[in-house]
Every structure is written in C-alpha cells, then in structure tokens.
Length: 200
Ligand SMILES: [Zn+2]
Ligand SMILES: [Zn+2]
Image (cartoon, rainbow, N blue to C red; front, side, top):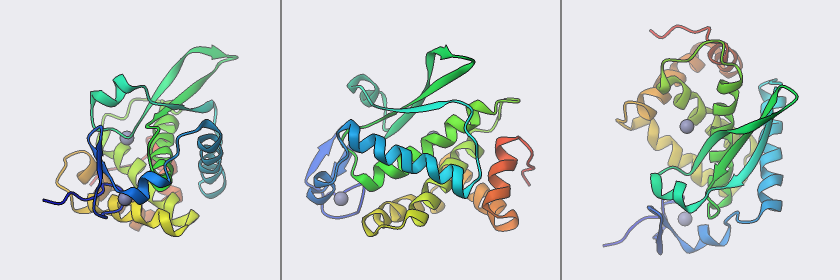
C-alpha cells in the first residue's frame, strides 16, 4: 500500500502529525523564522496590492506548538494577541514548522483572510462556510499570482476541495466561486469582509 504526499501527490515517505510528506516536500520545508517572515511579508503585500486592502492591525508568524498540532488536522491557525498596542492587536498566525514552501504560502494567505474577517467585525459572519470558502479561494489565487512552479502543486491539492463534499470547505469554495464568477474577486472580497453579500 502506497500513501501519497498530501502536498504534491508524490509517493509519500513519512507520516508526520497526520500528514504524509514526500522527500521533495520535506527538502523545501519552511522551518526557520527568517524564511517564514520573508514569505509572510510577501503574502501581506499581495493583499495590499492585488486586493487593495489596508490592514488595521499587525500580523506575526509563529510556529505552531505541538499541542496545537495534536488538536486536529489543521496546517495553521489564527489567534489574537492578548495585549494591545495603541488600539491595535497582533494577529498571530500559528503555522506548522514543517510545511513545504508552497503549502506554507497557501496556508498563510488562507489564515490572513481570517485576520481580515476578524478586524472587520461589524457583525459576526454567521456562516463559517463563506469565511473558509473565501480563505481557500484567496489562498489559491495567491499561489496563482505568485506563480512559481513548485507552488502549483499545492493549487492542485486545493482544487480538490472544489469537488469535495465537506459542508464547510466544499460548499464554501463553491459559493465563493459562484460569487467571484459573477462579480470578480476584488468586489467579492470587499463585499464579504464588509458583510455586504447575498447567498442565493
Ligand atoms: Zn510532496
Ligand atoms: Zn480557515
């Protein structure tokens, strides 16, 4: 029985905290802060440039502690800082320290969407699927726009979700896909974060 790498579909060599890795994905893992911060900055720039979004708070990358890893299957989480600096907070994006760089980029962009939703909390989005759908859609769009070849592997992995039956991620990406084909990504993004959208 062969297992497939969760990040590129090659033959997997290792199982680490619920995810299969191949040797090539292990060799490009983002596991030091200098590299992680550089990639995080690039991702933040994408939101400022392509989506014309101005952040109100700060974002910091933090490698995820093992207890969090053991909680579930997540690649990353977002949590607020416990303290504030002048009315702003720090959104910590907790991320596994063994992700291949394409999965790191995808996950980081996905988690930034949660930061943005949190900082635009006019009212609560009582619809986790639209939040996760937007986060996945944007994760994928970021990969496409930054377009290095190794990153494309993760897009294929993400696109599996377009056919998946998960009531949150599957339905969510389908809803956001429909909104984007009707209004474009820029409008869909700003409509969702300002809670100005209708689900049909
Ligand atoms: Zn792989
Ligand atoms: Zn999410």
